[in-house]
Length: 196
Image 1 (cartoon, rainbow, N blue to C red):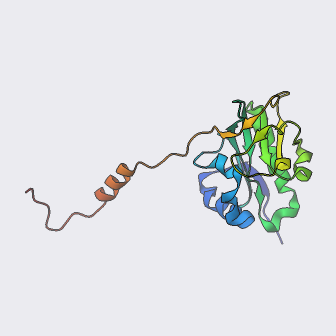
Image 2 (cartoon, rainbow, N blue to C red; image 1 turned 30 degrees about the horizontal axis):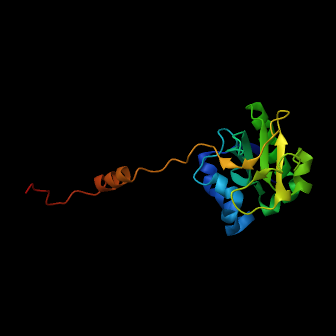
């Protein structure tokens, strides 16, 4: 089968529906119950740190980073979710997405990345539980799966306490403006209106 070239690039607005479908297929409804989701709720990903693996126009992988703060206020990033389409999982795309995310975060000057994941998989990218033992997620989590990676030496020294969201808030639509827009879009009555 002749496939088009796969590229890893920044996510675009046009990718959102396909990304969400990919995440639903990979994780199902359980993804909304994860403690990591509490750190992403109502937030935008860290600016410039949302990546897509695309084959032509088809989204086949995703990785995003989110601004967080450790309990003592230390800034960091949260990686996840990382997902690859089931029929493309043997191509090394997950690893390529993680490496691209780490490289971009370092280039933008971030000091550390945390994630909740399998240590056997993520250790190859430098993630360990060495400096995350005094950190807590906002909800149930498996302590041995909370991993960190410093991008700057010492960035996680003394990191302790509850991890909190720190990123930009998702814009909330102005209900009054939406109602006014809907009312303004109604066709005028064919009889016109009269003042009382």
